[in-house]
Amino acid sequence: MRNKITIIGAGFVGATTAHWLAERELGDIVLLDIPATETMPKGKALDLMEAGPVLGYDTNVTGTTDYADIKDSDVVVVTAGVARKPGMTREDLVGINQKIITDVANNIAASAPNAIVIIVTNPLDTMTFLAYKVLSAKGFPKNRVMGQAGVLDSARMRTFMAMEMGVSVENTHAFVLGGHGDEMVPLTRYSTIAGIPMTELMPKERVDAIVQRTRQGGAEIVNLLKTGSAYYAPGASVAEMVEAILKDKKLIRPCAAYLDGEYGLTDMYFGVPVVLGRNGVEKIIEVTLTDDEAAMMNKSAELVKGTMSALKF
Image 1 (cartoon, rainbow, N blue to C red):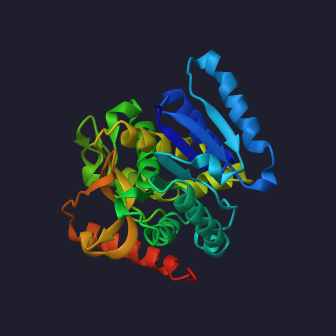
Image 2: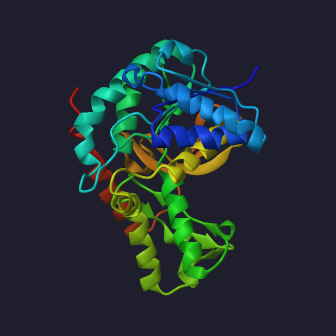
């Protein structure tokens, strides 16, 4: 039997995620959106199916507005919600997206109780925490609920590192932890080019510039697009996570995971290195931090807690 992957939210991020996943032939895909969109998800699903003969994949893609169609999903990706607009912070989105994520989580629990859930909706750490609170009340363990953030942030940093050095992105490795926001924590000591720390290959001012551009990566795209936010790189980042889970790869990536004492933080979702496998977040890896890095992590955590405080239970 093939794996089944559901993507809730058939907008730019959801549809692009479906595209990347279809090409990888990881399983059949259900693309779901709200009833008000009528036949839109069916149209996008059919369009993706018709690309199969050209690109050589046999993935079945189904579009729907009915949660009954997500039954028996192995992985559910949630991209539903309002995207940031220019001048809007992730914190502005809390009130708007809380109702959406609460409804989505309740429907996942009812229709796909054994799924691993990946949240993409912003503000990422807060919405993942919210989804977990809803899902855990229905029996979901913490390892089956996670947020996609650090994979994307690290990919952005790797891009900027490769551009700076004029080398292949395949030579780069980046380690971005913390909240998915302006106070994320790019760990330059652990970010390398061909195994060499970036701090040894470029002057401090260029390292600092890359760190700052990484932190502003989402906002930079929003400001350039004018009418929306990023979707190609977020979709590709989700696809990597789904592949690691379904293939049980034991892949180490920074993701928003539920912390219960790790890194000195409790009862919150926060970007940390995890091992991704068939059981979801199979292990949280605690790396040794310098005093400066620990201070940055704490500052980022406080920002996430501030956003979480806007939730209304």
